[in-house]
Length: 419
Image 1 (cartoon, helix red, strand yellow):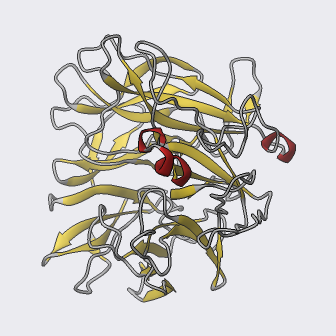
Image 2 (tube, helix red, strand yellow; image 1 turned 90 degrees about the vertical axis):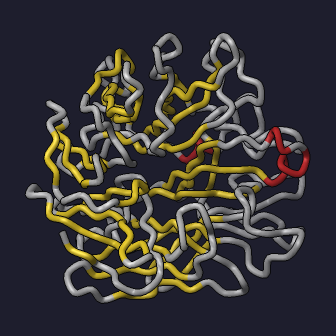
């Protein structure tokens, strides 16, 4: 176990894609905690030498954080808050954007247009937790909407979106807070303010993950090249919130992304932007009748597919109420319980690049879990690590996480014994 950072300040890792492709650098931000958003820099540390680089420094009173790295090249994407915030426009779920950084050049990922008629390909609010697809071409994010937040906050539903290299998108920029973006953006989840009890309706889509390094194989033998799995909040027959697992199959061609379905791509003054015609949303888990229904929301986790694309991992409580790892095919079927220990899973998790193990926190230790047997191998002694992130290096040789020391959250690394 090796401590990587030592400065008397906090260091925050995002839950996935924090390593550079060469497995030599870890990207992080300097928020004092995962819940606040007051950091001003995006940085990285060399895991071999301890050298720290400042990659980006915000100006104009803006704050930045939640950085991830392109799996294929030295390109970064992170949340950027508004410059020159004032009483009428401050950082919020619906007031933030993605910024991409490559070769010291920063550009907006998503465009913003809050003046009707709205611009297809632009967003109308805030994007969050930007994650590159395994091939580094597309970016997923979660989203909240300024237009509906102003109209009726109850209609500003959390959704999942995708940024695609089919831009740039340049709105008229009538409002002083509007801006252009390099990528074409579209929402891919479909939500409704009032889900019908007992149905597949959801009013919140979140904690998404890309399915497979190259997609997944359907029952008919065809390959779905790109898909996202996510958690969606359903309603039980008695109206209780039950988080279930969903998947959206995504079209490949640019023309498909620019073709509207039954509702406008850019939304209206009273409705959210709508998914393109070729996006298909499907429910994967049906847990309403279980003793502890729904996916576990404690600890917070993001659903994650193995690189092979035949298993999506998520947390769900067992018959004792303990959060365990479960696996399910992207084609559906019965979930299979992987872990069964009384300690359960205490953190977000990720797959090892080989797809043979998963990493997470259990009883205060970073552990490896065999993806076939559920057998647990501790990698560290107990030292109260953070449950926000356990992230493998691309070469599979190391795993990184966060833990407090001397009052500050620092970055740590251990060898996995695998590659």
